[in-house]
Length: 202
Image (tube, rainbow, N blue to C red; front, side, top):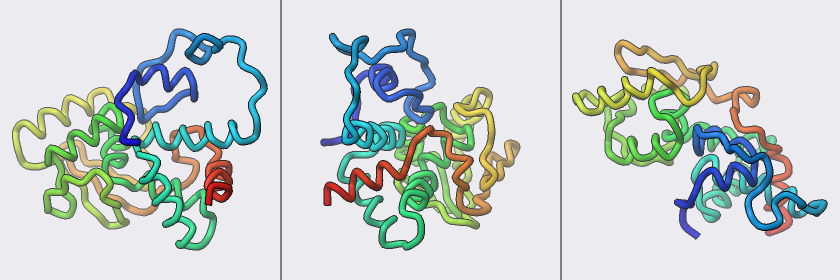
């Protein structure tokens, strides 16, 4: 299944707050659908599935992409869940979003795909590009690119800049100083349940 392009608030009502997916908040606190208000007790599988879906929809991934990230995290050694979150957080589209240069991750992906950003002086239009410590992410030296990003910086999607990023608003340039720490991940998710979900699938 390809990336989700349907109503975003429907997903937020089902899974809870997804800061990367949309800035809107749902007026109704219960899940969508005919039986949304009288949901039965969820099984363990349903709980794990929900945590996995949070990652998928927040970061805008297909099932195949997320599975690939889980396999990479397993191979890396260490805490699979934490490495998985680091891999997702260090994507270029998410980095642009966390810098406040785009209102949401889908918005950041569009800007990256349209070639508005450079990494270490080279134009990168691949949203899944993995940012590494020492990388310099900058807005392309074009009037249109600067105008869009300056507008977005006036009302960033998330208020706080993570500790691993350093932003120079005058130059519209940012430096990646390290790998994101767990407490700076904005999404409320239990990554261990995601790893469990995929360990049972394999």
